Length: 429
Image 1 (spheres, rainbow, N blue to C red):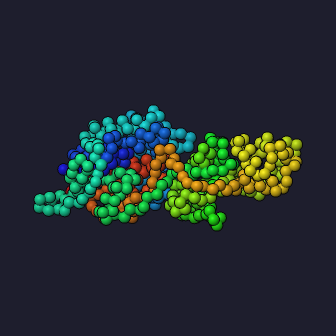
Image 2 (image 1 turned 90 degrees about the vertical axis):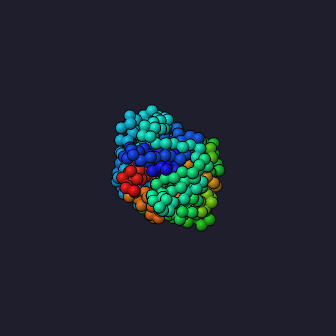
């Protein structure tokens, strides 16, 4: 019999175990991990460097990076936020560094530093780790004379265990979600989040690696109407699926923060569209179409004798400028003086309102994030305990919380794990 069984040996599971064992050393804690290794997602995250958290220290601002969970996480982040994560690692001799975009990594630049920290802490605190123990059954035990404590029977492919309390920290695991459904929880159907857009288009073909700061929004493919969702962020408070930030042209289409933010905020809408939709890109986000047209007319007067292709008329990567000029129907040897008004209008449109057909998605590196999971209204966010089933707790992405890329998904894991672990450590039988 264990006091606490934690299902899942990932970031949230380990952090929960460490929190419980540190705050209440008398409790017997074990982790059930389905694989032969623990913390595998930590290992590959952030390109193998582990994007531990983000340098946003205001809980009211931090929640704005979560398409699902913004309202629910406000209280938890006031309890355990990014600064607490930094303190946790620094107390264990691990310094973190802040990069220009706010992402935070260990100074060692390797995720193995974080893995070693968790494994060593677990061993020091006496946490038992049971690997190759995929869970196939979770059953509450009725209190009786024979078993006055009740608790849970947890069956793995190896053997059956008993525990007074359990924490489910399995991330996006359909088999575990089915077990939780059997216990009475509602599971919000999972759909992918954080993905890149597959686009075949001559305007971006052959120039992978080119990037620009853009605004981009999603249009309904057939009607040209904007797809709408409830978007509450710094960028927009209106109900329009749009984003701003760096866009990266790739071999298969488009990626970068602007695209990834769209994929996260629009995870369900884009899934319903079967990942076939149209985006509109403004490559010059500080300008609208009419302003760019006026600028091009001025350039025509000033640079009349130069060819359009060779003129650096706007602040765009040269290779992209060449592609957009050609897409506007302007030949490579055309001089500004010879440009027609229609050609300049076409170029202004390409620069500020070019439409691109998206046909499918690709996974963004190793950032496999899913929107979906245990319904948020069924979780008590003061303790991360189930509102339906006593002594059943959750941590991490097993619940319907997910974030954009940048260390925010890990911060959700640390926060939920700390609160669940603290609640368990302090709870009397």
